[in-house]
Image 1 (cartoon, helix red, strand yellow):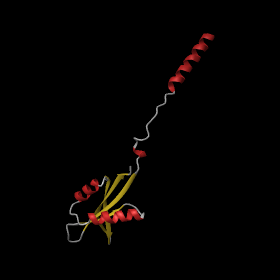
Image 2 (cartoon, rainbow, N blue to C red):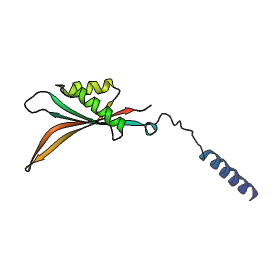
Image 3 (cartoon, one colour):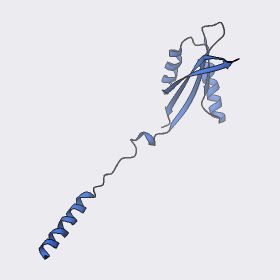
Image 4 (tube, rainbow, N blue to C red):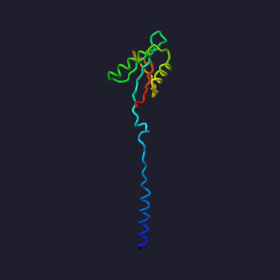
Length: 123
């Protein structure tokens, strides 16, 4: 009987020792740890023109408002959506999502522009 109890004790002890394996994980490589700055870019066509009107929104602080106006002025009157994307990629932004901008007037709706949501790594 002592032999069986000793064997049961040792097997329980060894199983408990092997079942508690812990692993350390690095915290700097996960995407949740990265901080991003986002840009909301509304692009609409100008009336009777092939040029585009661009409105860039970085946020509501005075610094972000100033940067948004500068980007808007630079990107307005471009003729291509790709030119706008290329300019933003050169500024270290990456495209996150593209949306249709719809406008409703007197019950008839339609796409009147495109919205690019872009982000930039803050590090």
